[in-house]
Image (cartoon, helix red, strand yellow):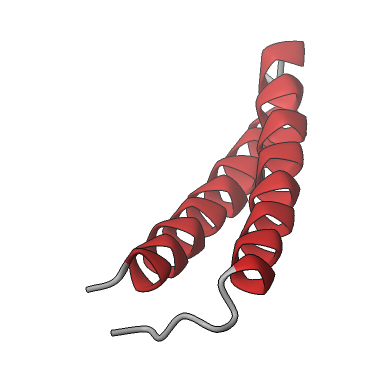
Length: 69
Protein backbone atom coordinates (compact mmCIF):
# COMPACT_ATOMS: atom_id res chain seq x y z
CA UNK A 1 0.00 0.00 0.00
CA UNK A 2 1.45 3.34 -0.99
CA UNK A 3 1.74 6.44 1.15
CA UNK A 4 -0.99 8.04 -0.95
CA UNK A 5 -3.47 5.19 -0.37
CA UNK A 6 -2.60 5.07 3.32
CA UNK A 7 -3.27 8.79 3.66
CA UNK A 8 -6.63 8.47 1.92
CA UNK A 9 -7.68 5.67 4.28
CA UNK A 10 -6.60 7.43 7.46
CA UNK A 11 -7.85 10.89 6.50
CA UNK A 12 -11.23 9.41 5.56
CA UNK A 13 -11.43 7.50 8.84
CA UNK A 14 -10.41 10.60 10.80
CA UNK A 15 -13.02 12.77 9.09
CA UNK A 16 -15.72 10.19 9.84
CA UNK A 17 -14.61 10.05 13.47
CA UNK A 18 -14.71 13.85 13.68
CA UNK A 19 -18.27 13.85 12.31
CA UNK A 20 -19.38 11.24 14.85
CA UNK A 21 -17.79 13.15 17.75
CA UNK A 22 -19.36 16.40 16.52
CA UNK A 23 -22.82 14.83 16.39
CA UNK A 24 -22.26 13.32 19.84
CA UNK A 25 -21.08 16.64 21.30
CA UNK A 26 -23.92 18.68 19.83
CA UNK A 27 -26.56 16.12 20.82
CA UNK A 28 -25.24 16.11 24.38
CA UNK A 29 -25.16 19.90 24.45
CA UNK A 30 -28.78 20.22 23.32
CA UNK A 31 -29.97 17.64 25.84
CA UNK A 32 -31.26 18.87 29.23
CA UNK A 33 -27.94 18.05 30.94
CA UNK A 34 -25.79 19.72 28.25
CA UNK A 35 -22.67 21.63 29.26
CA UNK A 36 -20.32 24.01 27.50
CA UNK A 37 -17.75 21.24 27.33
CA UNK A 38 -20.07 19.29 25.03
CA UNK A 39 -20.43 22.33 22.79
CA UNK A 40 -16.64 22.72 22.78
CA UNK A 41 -16.24 19.08 21.70
CA UNK A 42 -18.73 19.60 18.91
CA UNK A 43 -17.12 22.77 17.59
CA UNK A 44 -13.59 21.37 17.88
CA UNK A 45 -14.63 18.26 15.98
CA UNK A 46 -16.19 20.29 13.16
CA UNK A 47 -13.04 22.41 12.89
CA UNK A 48 -10.85 19.29 12.95
CA UNK A 49 -12.94 17.60 10.29
CA UNK A 50 -12.74 20.63 8.02
CA UNK A 51 -8.98 20.91 8.56
CA UNK A 52 -8.58 17.23 7.69
CA UNK A 53 -10.57 17.73 4.49
CA UNK A 54 -8.35 20.66 3.51
CA UNK A 55 -5.24 18.61 4.30
CA UNK A 56 -6.53 15.63 2.32
CA UNK A 57 -7.23 17.79 -0.71
CA UNK A 58 -3.78 19.42 -0.44
CA UNK A 59 -2.10 16.03 -0.14
CA UNK A 60 -3.94 14.61 -3.15
CA UNK A 61 -3.07 17.64 -5.28
CA UNK A 62 0.57 17.39 -4.21
CA UNK A 63 0.81 13.70 -5.12
CA UNK A 64 -1.48 13.67 -8.17
CA UNK A 65 1.19 11.99 -10.31
CA UNK A 66 1.88 9.17 -7.83
CA UNK A 67 -0.04 5.91 -8.24
CA UNK A 68 -2.20 4.35 -5.52
CA UNK A 69 -0.18 1.13 -5.59
